[in-house]
Length: 311
Image (cartoon, rainbow, N blue to C red):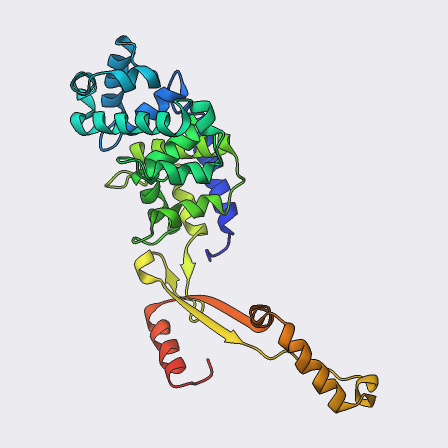
């Protein structure tokens, strides 16, 4: 766990500092939920300026509705969204979504968004061309569902602030927010937009940490080795050791217990064990530890465990 502060406090502090510096971002800029969905698909592997040009073309052609976009000729659609890049591929992806919407929800976005959000997420991920980031953007910004979007900017932000490892999965990065923040659509929208703003101005590919609104917070989230106390600033310096133990519960006998017939008590206990859930017994005596260690201490602990030494 991070030193000094809990993860919840760190994230809330980040949000307050970013909001204080940048203010509300008014994101996602769109005139309808369907326009958000179109933008989420078009913004894959390109910048928003290029997407805006494509959306303007679609608006002028009066194609920003599920029914009209479904009917438009694929080649014409590709020409209209040319500025977004990969226009032939993205035209097919827009068609894939509208086909899904009509086959599954009779073309109704309201009906689609009335579905359980995590069930809908699973359905969206089955649509060719829609990955986790696009699905979550649709759910959060078009469907008003409390799901946090993880993009390249967000992963870079988390990594540079020692909150995830370099090989963290999409779900692991997303859980940082879902597990530690209040489940709130407005908060998730604003926080994600603020992270994008931070990444574009300061947390670039080559970081510009001076004058960054989060510069002073790094001292609050350094990790330390749970064994020797060494400072572990970078994720590649940290090793996680999980120890799982079974412990026997302590038993104290009273005078009344000593007066009981031992044989009768043993038979009663054995019969009781026959009806008990083994998993419940394990949970009652199961102990798990998670340690963050430097490489040296990790190797030392592993050696001691290998040779069955007490650690």
